[in-house]
Length: 172
Image (cartoon, rainbow, N blue to C red; front, side, top):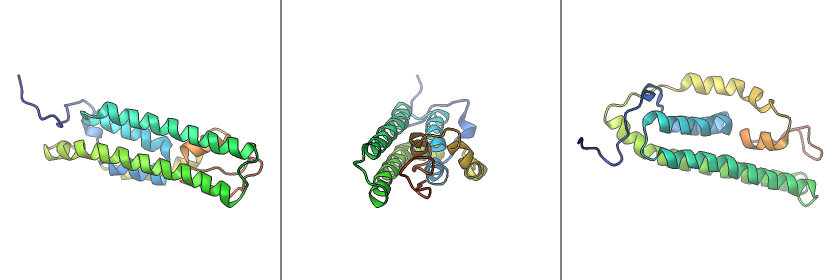
């Protein structure tokens, strides 16, 4: 029987694709949740994180929570309870704050294992090209579906095409 530290990552065949947890967090800010949360989940699996189930559950909860919050904002707007302008922008800002907070939490959880992984010589990949490409394709991903809930989930805001919404209302 081999000795294993409780927080030590297990060996995986995907370990050459591990990136620093700050990279998916930066992706959340620059590109959106469409890349960040799946990337966090993949990174947990590739690293062999002992907390990968928790990290994946947090990513799923982030998507579900954002969808619920976005649906509430849209329902309030449709019901006429949320006036256009500053109140709507503040409501969407609340969704963006939720997305940033949960992304930061996932990054913090993943960082604990990553530090052990890196200490024991695990390879770490540079994510600069992925981040650069994601910024370039961000608009294409947002434009895949013409529904404000999609835009709120993947990008953080809403833009044009929705009665009562200003074309310039958008987030990350």
